Length: 117
Image 1: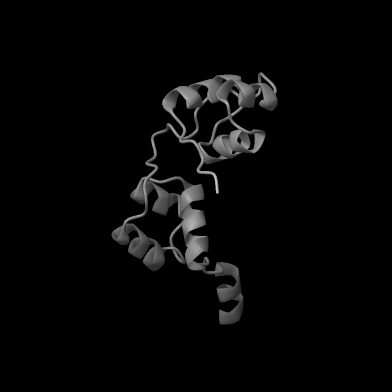
Image 2: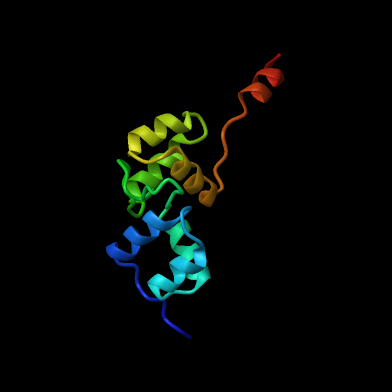
């Protein structure tokens, strides 16, 4: 099994500047990588067609800590996702994905109201 070559900052800069401007095959040739590796890098690092590196933003890109997961488990059903995201300094998408990983769901307010009447 072949071990993938790690992405360097220089590779990411080329990928970011080239994605959406040049053909993927040309980028792969320049970086000495396969076309699937280029697509994987684009997805993994959140590179956008406008040349921005999606992984460089105000939100952290770190593993979830135990206290964050516990807070998510306790609050997800009744607290808006945006509020949880702000508290944990993560994106709403990251909160949704982690909640999905744990099988958490939101409380259906409308169903609860209908059952009470």
